[in-house]
Length: 302
Image 1 (cartoon, helix red, strand yellow):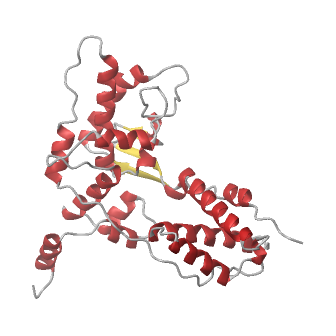
Image 2: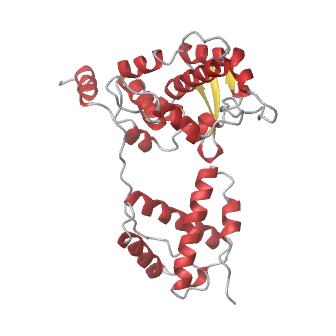
C-alpha cells in the first residue's frame, strides 16, 4: 500500500514555527514531491538517502544559491523526521545527509553616529494645515525606526506587536519571537518617546473601520503593517553617505553596538532571542579594534 505524502498534515504540525517558515517549508516540500514523483517515487517510503542526494545535486545544477539549498534540505529533515516519529517510514533517509552550508553573510554595520543621524532626521516637521495623515505616518515611521534599533527586533516581531505589548512606564516591550518564544526587551528613552508620540494621536488617525485592534503599527489603509510595508519605510531612509539600510541591518547594528559598548555576549543573546549563543557570535561579530581593546584590558601579559 502506497503512503501519501501528507504535506498538509506536516505543515499543520508546525505550530511553533512562524507563518513565513511554514509557507517556505510547504513550498519546498511540494517542489520535492513533484520532482520525486517524476522520478518514480510514489510516496515517502520510496525515498532513500541516494534519492535525496540526487535531488540536492539537481538543485545545484539549476544554479540555486547555497542558502536556498540548505533551507530546502532543512525542510526535508523536518518532514522525514515527522514521518519517522509517526511511523509512516521505518528509517529517516535524511540522516547523515550533507548539505551546503549557507553563507553567513552579514550586512555592513552602520556606525552608531550614522544611525543616530538617521533617527534624528526621522523626527517629523510641523504638519501643514489639513495634513494629519502625513503627520501620523511620519510619527509612525519614527517610532518604527526607534523600535527596530532600540530593541533589535526582527521585522516580523515588529509587525506582530500589539498596543498591549508595549509597557511605556516600565520601558519594556513583549515580543513573540521564533518558535513562539516570548521575551521582554528593554526600550530606551528615545524609543519610548517615539512610541508615546505615535500612540497619543497618530495611530488613531490611521484607524479605519475594520482596523485590527491588536495591531500596534498600521499602514495607510488602516491594516496591520506588513514586513513589506516596513521595508519600504526603511528604503526611503538613507544614511549620510547615501546607503540604504534594511531592518536586518538595524538589528545587526543594535547587537554590534551593544557589544562594542561592553555588553556581555550572553545578555545580547537573550535580547536578540537566539536559542544558541553561537548564532549570536556570528551575528554580532566584534571589530578588530574592540577585540584588541578587550585583550589589552583583560589579559595579564597584554
